Length: 519
Image (cartoon, rainbow, N blue to C red):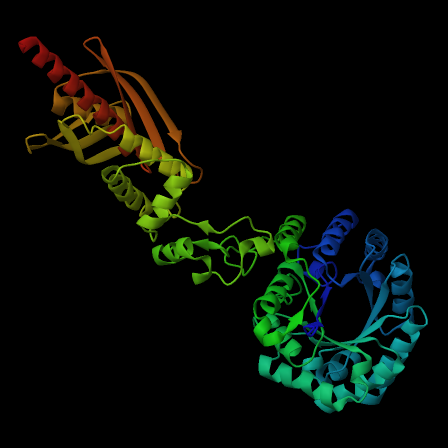
């Protein structure tokens, strides 16, 4: 028995028209063509390429897009005015599948204050606009602007009239993002029931995000019979933006159990489209943006990471590969647990015994309290320090605390507190040419082991203001040279730890030499 074919919801992308209207998001012709070709690869059903009457540049960009894409519909926007429609028709003429999208406001507030026209005048202009567009193009879409605030009975009258006039698609815009999902769904249901010829056209929706409900309203419209959704990549557009293409598409795909519809979108192209639009417009995508945000498939909480490692679907309802993301990321931070850390170390090729791992985990948690995210380079530095630790050497002196006083017009002074191997705690202070020189002099005073610092190297392990610093020193004494390494987000602390590691190695070698002499 053949499986019933699902309805298809058409995706009408208006990134190049409504999306570009967002402040600072304008694109030149080359950029529009570049984005249009990616939208074609993405599999959108229609591209609204611009508003040709708006400017010569907009006209040329619509013409360029119309000539660049081959397999999808290209629409030009026009008011219900002969000059607008003629201009739009000329702009989309190179397209293999051209469409003219005419619009006219229908709500009481727009009729009264913007257009200053009565209902019958609006109805007449809408019908004339559609008929005029049909003279140039067989595919005509009509939008009653501000439909969600239009009186329902008048909206029904307009929709029926424009379909009779030849409109093949009727778009119901929530122009100012005013609608609530249940009300908007009921509005679509009413049109599907009350408009006698509604099956002669595709009912579309175009929702704005002023109350953050553009995707919710669009999905509710689909649930009640709409079969085209107008949206933009990354949800860009006027004011708070439009219905987000990636969100509505993935919601329909992920919750097929509710919507029982398909789209023609190749979801694996979503992330590429998102990044392209972001780069072209300069509109950065917020990190926690659904589907395409940097954190959309990232996990830091230890419980979540443990679940993801065992079974991805415990905390992910979509596969990252399905939207063009390589894989989920386990972000190492202060909320991460042992399981995630061990998994990452294995991926880095690091093998540690249980004792070493516990030391690394402790240092990892200490570092995570100081910086927001731990990078692979941070882990490698912690592991290096652990593997080079004085595990086989008796630690003679250990750093408990230090205090630095330094600045313009001030003699750099360091106060250091060290713990000796017998448990004694000694505090001393010294001055120096700088804070690091001062702390080294203070250590020398306590240990009574003056060494020659023959090499001092510091590097940032990662980028950013909270980067961990790694200090390497070489100390010469009595013909022997010892190297010490220290890491910390505080370079003075890293310097002190590196110095003390080398000092302890000198103590150990001296003690070993004395023992050999006695033997």
